[in-house]
Length: 103
Image (cartoon, rainbow, N blue to C red; front, side):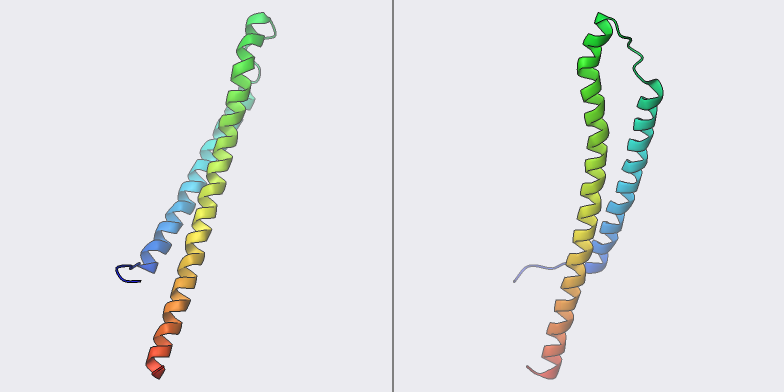
């Protein structure tokens, strides 16, 4: 395909950065989950507290779940990039060998 080029080493390095970002997000998500658990249901059980909890609890649970989803997504992208670059290198090597042998 004309006009297409990629630097497999740079892409693999970028994939490693995705793994590092996932690790950092995982730590932040864990810290958030721990902080929320430590606070507990501090809003109380009265009518005002129950009204507050109706929005707060699903929102906080959704936020913690979003961190988990982001981490999984970044790790999945990292793996996909690494796999793609492994395949790219193998195909390039096979083509180079074919041309070296003289088709």
